[in-house]
Image 1 (cartoon, rainbow, N blue to C red):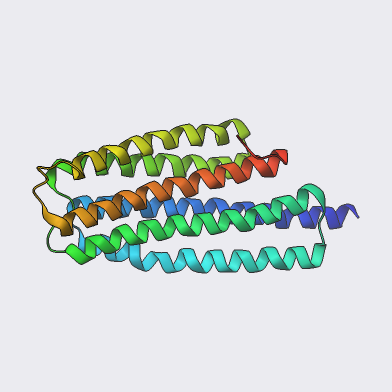
Image 2 (tube, one colour):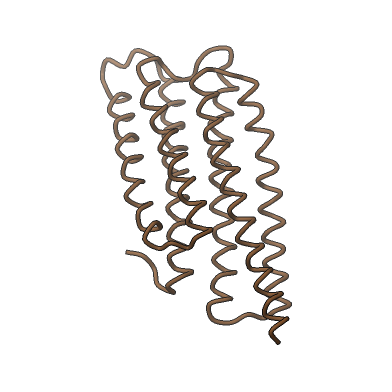
Amino acid sequence: MTWLRSAFQDELDGVTATLVGLSSLVSDAISKATHALLTANLSEAEAVIAADDRVDDIQHELDARIIDIIARQQPVASDLRALVTALRMSADLERMGDMAHHIAKITRLRHPGAAVPSELLLTIEEMGKVARTISDKVGGIINSRDIDKALEVERDDDEMDKLHRKLFTTLLDPKWPHGIETAIDITLIGRYYERYADHAVSVARRVYFQVTGKFSK
């Protein structure tokens, strides 16, 4: 029985390691997507778009593996909670990758022009930094299951919300000089960063639930 428990724990640890790896991939994706957006770098945008297939493949493989573990091991209590929570975290991480993918597609769509007007470059750069900081923290939280750090992520997300509001203040200025097409691009870009952070918060909340069996408030 001890050997069986050890083997099962190895499988659980493997799930955690894959989630951490997935979080690293989507962190890298948002950084590269941001740089591509700010510099109108087509090749970097194309790399982010292509890399999203790997994120999708890892998520699908992980979900299949988790379902197989549940079917074979028939876990209960905290073990079952950990596996079901991992399924949901993998979905959130995949959506984070999608947000980076969407940002990169706007860069590609507007190339060789720039999608972001000069006066908004700093705000978008800050949104990219906040997104990377949050997602890096989430990777550590998945690995450590530190519920205090998990609660911090929601506070970190407040900074993204402030930047998102700042973006809209600029867009709603009656003197906005860049036209409807650029306004739509910026609206979408802001939404993608905001949703990226929201999914990261969701992952942190799921870690809190996994550890405590309670939902964070």
